[in-house]
Amino acid sequence: AGSADTESPLVVLISPPTSGLAGQPLWIKVRVLDNRAYDFVAATLFFRASGEKIWKKIAMDRKVKSIFAATLPGPEVTNQGIEYYVEATDGTNKGWFPATGAEQPLSLVAYGPATGSAPKAPSNCASKSGSLTWEAGDRKAYWHRIYRSKEPDFKPGPATSVTFVAAGTTSFKDNGDGFDGILLKGDWYYRVTSVKRDGSESEPSLAVKVTY
Image (tube, rainbow, N blue to C red):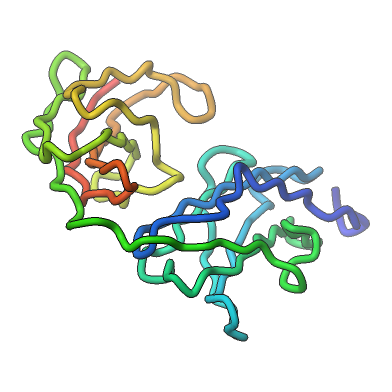
């Protein structure tokens, strides 16, 4: 496609959240379909507290090809509620979800706050024979989330999320496939968090290197 391209990107929000725990981050993920190469496409999350006039925005990270993700910061998720929409561009044309964009955005209701403090992070994370191992950091944890990145100091979020396991599990062996389905090669870094039943999440563990 060149300068004659007038087709707007098609934005599809993946399981759009309609509620969340006050004070806790929320993940927003979209698929953007366009006739241009993936590298030309970008997506932005717009949000504001219900009743406010000014929109805030976050550039969404590409998880793989046409999938983008962003984290709505916990302090922004209040009992006032949230309005949000996603805008995508291919460098020339723009598309939105919902299609009405800022005129009729999506709404999210926050509940809570969380009961008690956030859980403690898993400790003593290590790599053994290609498997990730750790010690549970909190008895109140309901499950553990596992994240992966090429960068050792990465910040966990929806763009780096691999999977989650039950709280009683203290090891994980990746299947070796990247988010794009291509086999992982070289050094990759993993971090693990604890998550309570109410959705509150701990700080991440220290990064652990696994070499493929």
